[in-house]
Length: 291
Image (tube, rainbow, N blue to C red; front, side, top):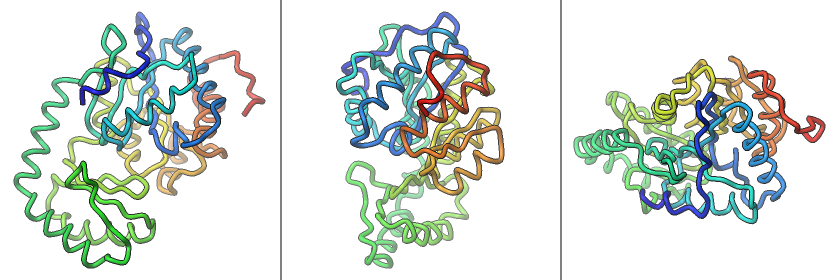
């Protein structure tokens, strides 16, 4: 987890009074593998302007682990002299890093300690049952090439969306009686987790540390695991790109939010300019015709 402090760029100094907090899912939301460098440059340009004028902070809220997110951030920062590190990250939907006075991302204690204890206890008590369940899934769904992630013992990868729906149904039937156990799902990935630690509770902790009220937060996401953040902070503004899961689009549409007609990174830029800025009554020098 300490790897985050060694990013090649650092977060900018905190505004004297942070006023807004923008949370971005990473894969297929903020970050598009092989996407145009111009989209990344536009993102950092917008965020610099919003930070200067409105005290806006930004961060990544993802299912990636710390090592994998660091690799992704290196791609996000690539060849952009204006890039700067996020003010916070949430990895594996639960572990928090916060920028310190020097702009380095440091573990958010005591949140991470309590999170680790809760998961150690959860997997100590239910690990045997989960191992049996995962072995059963590997056998029953052998045609899906279901596999476990090497760096996360209680997670699965299924590169078949419909197949993962079937796998999820079997899982819910088995773990339903255990209220502490939930699953986090994003794309082909599914992870077992403690119910008290997710993208929503982690983001609420981050907002409280920066003293930003949820009504001044914006949440961008495309996957099922982003629903926790949108549910847990119902006052926050919601945005999703056109490639978002149907459940996410429905969640965004039912409250104050913006469903972009553009996919991935371009959808984020569109959501910022045509969703977030009007909602918070912000002005920038960015021509809206660009989106």
